[in-house]
Amino acid sequence: MAQDPITIQADTPLKIRYCIDPDWHPYESLKQNIHTGISSDFIAMLTQRTGIETELIPTNSWLETIELLKSGQCDLTPILNKTTEREEFLYFSEVWYRAPNVLLSLKDEPFLQGLENIENRTVAMTEGYRITEYVLKHYPDINASLVANEVEGINAVINNEVDVFIGSMLSTNNYIQSNGYDEIKIAGWAGPEDLLRVGVTKQNQALIPIIDQFIAQISEAEQINMFRKWNNVSYIDNTNYKLTKNITLFFSVLLMTGFIYHQLVRKFNKQLIVQNKQLESLKTKLIKTNQELLFLTHHDLLTEIYNRHYFNQAISNEENDLSQNGPISVVFFDIDHFKSINDIHGHSVGDMALKKLATTIKGLLDERHTFVRWGGEEFIVLCRKTNKREANLLCQNLNNHIKNIVLEPDVKITCSYGIAEKLSKETIMQCIERADQAMYQAKTNGRDCIIVAT
Ligand SMILES: Nc1nc2c(ncn2[C@@H]2O[C@H](COP(=O)(O)OP(=O)(O)OP(=O)(O)O)[C@@H](O)[C@H]2O)c(=O)[nH]1
Image (tube, rainbow, N blue to C red; front, top):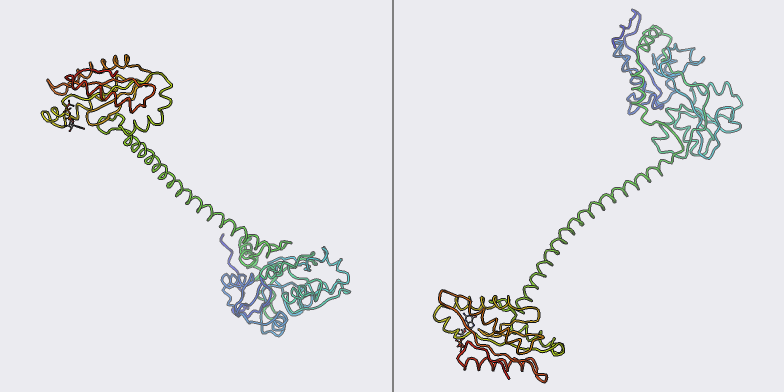
């Protein structure tokens, strides 16, 4: 927003020296001889908008500032209350800042509400402050203890030297929170609020209308910005800040630990899932390999029917049961002149003959039969619940099918068969031997025939 030009009179000083309270943060203070706080922004804006040069005269206390103003070594002080006493050596601008005063006590003190309830408590006040003059004037019986500045007053409360301290809410709040004094509280309001103005020495009266024009132009936003910039602490309450800080820290650490733990668990879970999958796959492979191994152990690789090793194992486990479940017969057979097939047509044709024979016979058997490659070109069929007559019929059927196997054009095979029915006193192996002998007899008889052992 455009501002009206500020009218500078001919008698207006173009350079002024000013003093401040060195210990009244956030209103104003000296930090390494540099003016800081709300009034430093005020002076900067004043210089910028009026063109009046300003020079800070540093002091060590508010009382010294008052002295320099009285003696004319300072022309102006930017933020103070108007009092009758001060009016003797200063002119005051309009109010440009308002702030309440408060009673501060230790936490275990009762809530006092206001100056009326102070009773015989010792009350610390800053020497030379308007609120001090006000309290001493209106509460003459109060047990007052004057301190040089607000910091000294607050420390007097903390150290139990006084019961109460009266100070500006903004500055005391700032000091207490900056130092983490959680044992202190606001116990009530103290007197009227501060109506803060600029004070200029009587010789510089011409400055007042210029300053008032400038004050009138300070916008609400600029006021708020000044407050926010210098009053970075918002309130005092009964909160134990150290405890809050520790709890916050504890929960932060807890949250962080939880987060890291969660991440680690997720990571390990992922790894575990991968490893479980690998294990599962290994397990599947192992089961498959074991099944293959078992198959290889029990089967003949070429024909894929049971081998002799399996037969021996199975029969030794089953022998007793076998005899109790009806007659058992063994068909023992051997390919005729197999050597000639190998010799004439080659070993691969010999292999093909063995495979085709096995496949053909498997297709003719059922769950009562165990079909085994006994040796090179020798086979047996163990027939449960089968007598020698039935075995003979089966054998004839096998023979018919074997004769129909075509290896190559004009190349066929025949077999010689021996059949034996297990006698009650003999073992399966003895029965097989008799079947073998019967088969041998079939060979002797000219091959391609069936002999049933007597
Ligand atoms: N191709 C092939 N030949 C085999 C296999 N196992 C054994 N043989 C052959 O089978 C033949 C058996 O010959 P022999 O014992 O003389 O009997 P045979 O020639 O069948 O004569 P008979 O039994 O008296 O009719 C041998 O030449 C073996 O090498 C095999 O797995 N594959």
